[in-house]
Image: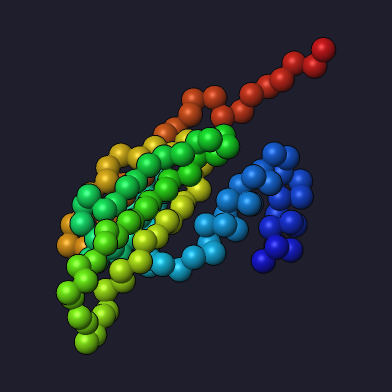
Length: 139
């Protein structure tokens, strides 16, 4: 995987930070998620669905971090302390905390975050920028 990123980002100046983020964000498999493109003809709106069964609304945190200049959508789930008198014979719901990160392009914005039936849904949109090509004057 590293060879692939090295070859892809070899001539893309300044994008090595993106490669680092992508490699870190694909390291974890919990919780499972889907990324949907809402319209394949015009792919400007996306939906991320994260399976967070067993987490209450107040145990989830969704934020947009830009401390490295790269927008990163951070989803965190923190379980509280369990009651010591609970004894499980089968435990199918995850009880561990998690952090899941998605690296976004600079032209993406978060439109909506909702929790419904154990699925956290985040709606994203690509904001069209007017001047995509910039002609630089040589001095």
